[in-house]
Image (tube, rainbow, N blue to C red; front, side, top):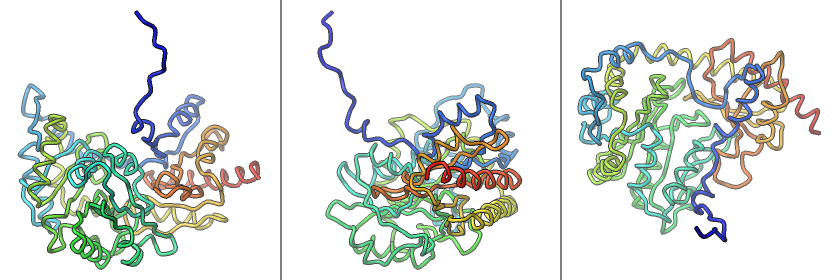
Length: 404
């Protein structure tokens, strides 16, 4: 056999695909745990709140002896139950307007692929959910970032600044409220402004509403509530955080645009189906009432308050109190939080305990932004959160002392 004379190279897309700041410190965390250290995971939105028992009961009673392929659009019974949930939220949709996806991640990819072609642009408000960067690479589209500021509570800038980002290749506006990573809940007038821009400039609005149920102050406005957007509103959603079933990988796309839904079904046919058993379990989750959400919201509000109270006492640390979700974007008195996040896992501990955070740069599309920020997920019970905040504070002091 002839010997290769030239090294084979991977694709430009593969090279461009960014590592997630949420997960790229995994090797350092794993090594720390091998040494017997406790690592408080504030890097990822993995709730420790118990998954509702009705999910496990439904899975145990799965009514078949073969786990077969499900319909590409989704389990008809789950589609019907999910449509009922959305109608209770005030959205005028039916099961024909929904496609079940393999997690909210696939929902984002399907929505972007339905709305754009390779080389098109999507306006996005930074800081944003870091994996939007990766999905943009996978779809061959460009993110056009509009920067929001902590000083403004990460609310939207004036309309003119958003419109100024529109080019002939712009196809959509991507918005997330309650927001990951900032926890900002956009006001109704802000959502109406985006709707007006989309109508005037013939754009889709792709709305990430995974944290809809987690609003502590203010009121959530869903994109499907707003009139006149029937042909251009695309909702992305997930059961993961709402019901603490992150590993079940059940999300969805919702739209009253028949062509969007048809395209998403065909995308779904290419991957066959989303998980069959998990969809069956999720049917039971859609019947949980407000008492369930009231209890969960109260717990997350408590965790948010513990986190914010601790951060606001730290010297040189700046943060905005989030009104929703369970994250906070934090500016640290540190120049490079990528290095700091690694150092916390490799070089620092108190009584064999340390903290894992997500470096902020990956939550931006604008080069150079976020280097002095981290995102924290307020997902641990309050006693563990208090301990993690103490370790983080001491870690900041020691890092600055040794890296001056």
